[in-house]
Length: 255
View 1 (tube, rainbow, N blue to C red):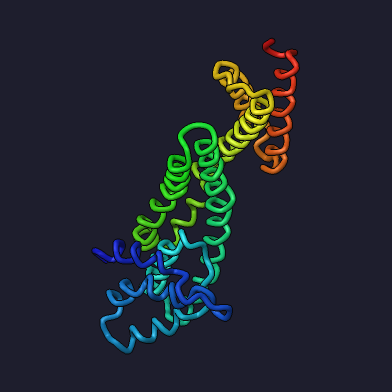
View 2 (cartoon, rainbow, N blue to C red; view 1 turned 180 degrees about the horizontal axis):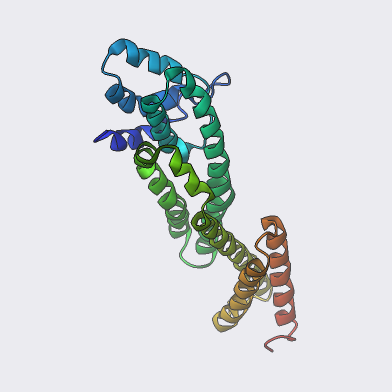
């Protein structure tokens, strides 16, 4: 499979090409993993049979496409052709669930929040947009670029990583960072609104103190209660930031 990983990585960006309601990503997926099928099946009839077989329904998270391609290639190599698709359907559902939770539910909001903070309060639109792209695409590109190699090399054993304590720790820290960033963004918005109303400039030392309080509050709450829904954390952090800034504006805190 030398050189296949790079080809699958490049083709994975076309995973949702010709997306259709009947079989969803099937055409894009076969295009993505075709270099592996070409390497596995030198006989054209066997290769055509594998292509037709893998044109069955495919629905997974786009970033997980190369990993699914690697796992499917390993199944094609190890199992009877009649059992490949049934295994693949189970695998793609697992990858779809984990991909949606990690990329759509955590990393994408995190990138958006940091992009908003940088755009509105620090460096402008270009910096905010670049920050959002970098934060999201760093893990996205890492998973895409190594996915096929991991799936092919480790086979079904690589699915154990999705339930590992290491991944749980990463998800916990991403949740903490996201809740903290949302709290800081909410506080900054309230602070900016108050200063606009007063025709004043933002007091940087006071901002640092208040932002630190919000950050400690948001992360501390998550550390104590890891299982609290993210939505509840967001509401509490936003509420805390509003209360703190109102107290500051009234001169009760940090007069």
